[in-house]
Length: 169
Image (cartoon, rainbow, N blue to C red):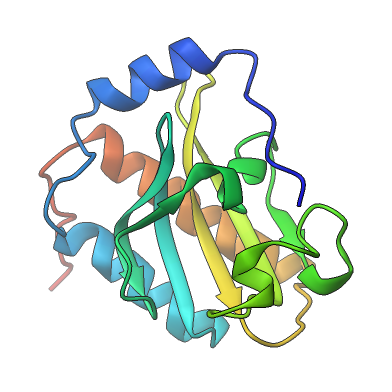
């Protein structure tokens, strides 16, 4: 297993993450709606809104897993925060970064992963909106655009805490 490297701006990234005061907070409908939509849109069993701190990836919102967090060193999202676009792993069993990852070899038996990094305006990637499946999958350009748009919506919500979007009549 190849642990994700530490970003060059790790200190600034962590400061920005902690300043948001989102870690270890209760679920929020504004994030849960986005995660639920992503699960339905992409027909995947697991969707996570994951925040990466010093030692873990913590799930602000989730569908399909009972855990609230996993160690950072085994996280796929730890790799995704190094990307400026969606990280897609069609089959983790053949990707050298993940082939012997415990999340691939054992429950939840991850095969497919797509993680859209949550990048703040100042450039710090604080986590991901990610799709996970136990089947090998591929995303086309439309799928990537939709996932990126949902990621942008998550970032907008993060930057406007507590505000629910108005519902059109």
